[in-house]
Length: 180
Image 1 (cartoon, one colour):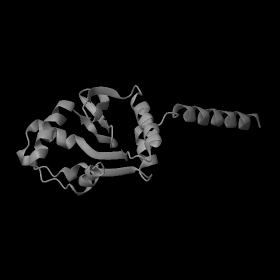
Image 2 (spheres, helix red, strand yellow; image 1 turned 90 degrees about the horizontal axis):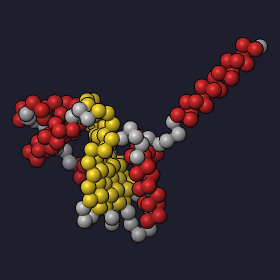
Image 3 (tube, rainbow, N blue to C red; image 1 turned 90 degrees about the vertical axis):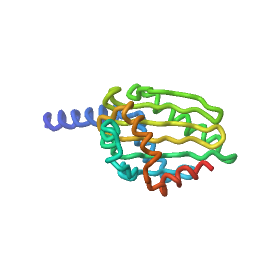
Image 4 (cartoon, rainbow, N blue to C red; image 1 turned 60 degrees about the horizontal axis):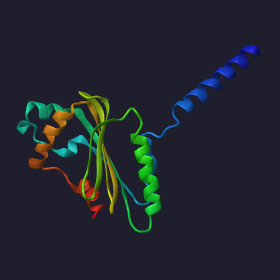
């Protein structure tokens, strides 16, 4: 009987420990929790949707292209009826991105709003790149680029290849239209 009580206490302690370790919301959980809600638009894309002709890529671009696995996009559209909700959601995202696991790569301001680039991993071996921007009069968008050992400088070189690609823009177009 004593052994049974010790096992139950150990199990309860383990459950409490695991539960307390996961109190902060992750960006992935935020995506999942909000993808079906009103005012949000979610798009998940495999990397192969980029349809880049690898024969026209430099070695660095090929390496970057192969390191990207998928893109997750989530946007919240602001209008006159949801300002308070928008402010709440914006604060949630900013709080998530303040987690020390997100390293800031770059930030900036424009006339229309603000943006940040954050990443998880080492500078040369990124597993998740997060682009977050908010437009003062339109809403905010988060783009998660997920991959294995992505290199930021090579990813930036890859961006020039997008200009000549025959990318399927049907899903991305839906995302862009969201803010018009």
